[in-house]
Image (tube, rainbow, N blue to C red):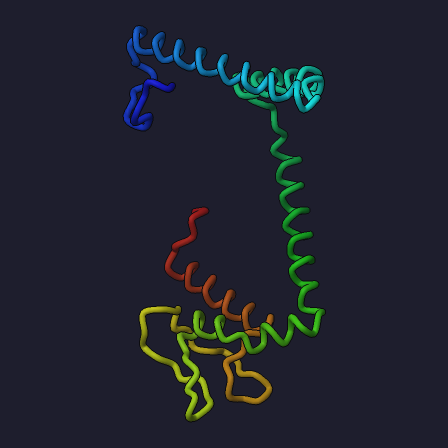
Length: 177
């Protein structure tokens, strides 16, 4: 409602009828003004027929959905969720087939800094693990082919993910439980 300043502080169930009526009057007044303004603009753009024949019927449908809710099949929703997750995983995995991506991820300095809290030492030209405020400070489970750089390959990231999941399970931190 337009007459409300802090909506989160309002007890909407027990709002006085006089406040509710006043708020609804203002809402209706400004909605009508907005409608008149938009109607003129839509007519000038020659799209008022689209609103009349498509948008208005759609708004009625959306209003019914908002007021009455929708019936959702949890079985179909779960099946679709699994299909989408599978397709998303396949799509992400397909990135690793591109050489440019492999190179970017295998030596990505930002990922190394974030995961391993390492900084590049220009004099020794190696990664040095530092105690600093950023990064997770994880121990690199693998190194690159050169042997000096912490790896950020898909396999290494999967190892880290598995280790983190084991730690979550060990500490019983899983939100689903």
